[in-house]
Image 1 (cartoon, rainbow, N blue to C red):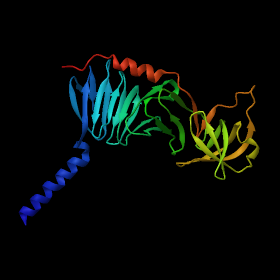
Image 2: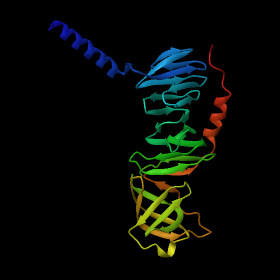
Image 3: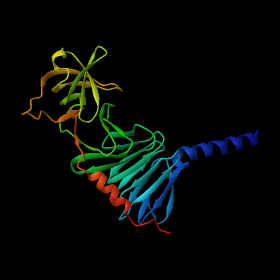
Image 4: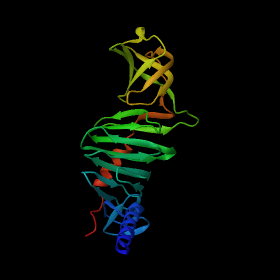
Length: 267
């Protein structure tokens, strides 16, 4: 009986040890000064669930299982988990061949196909920029609304709207009719179904749409107002779920190339 109790105690201790975040999920390789869980690292370190990685004047490489590779740019900070990274400062390059996402300012950046390769950076004013180098990435809001589909060679920026709501939709897109349903496709390559009005006369035109959007894999907009976007008018900014969506300015791609020329990892 005593032996069985000893075995039970050992098992419980092992489980508690694992639950405390001591099961390795990958490794980090320093290219210069780096901190992992507030400990200075000059070569390599083991990563655990919830590990906090901070880089100094050089970048660092994070190696996870199932083909996920992350490079954190200099002066960056993030918390790493088995299936996602929460970026809190700076920029990160992500190459993933299995399900993995990168979170920044409440947004989720998710590879849409195997071996997608991209860069996510944080800018002034809580702005997030996403650039796809290969493959493509979907960017969703805090409540799961798809904001953009970033294709290879393109970038998109996202800024939190002051006073915005999580259901607002305002923007310009091409209206289409498919299988008995009306849709608007934005410049960020996302298609939203249109409801609550008659859209027949808008099919085949670029229109300014305002309304309320619901979350889901196929988002739906209950339209409050719609009008053809004239050649003289630019229409409103694309605002979806309280997030202002725009074209990227290339910051993320510039950071990527700067990262590639970083000092090699310490020997």
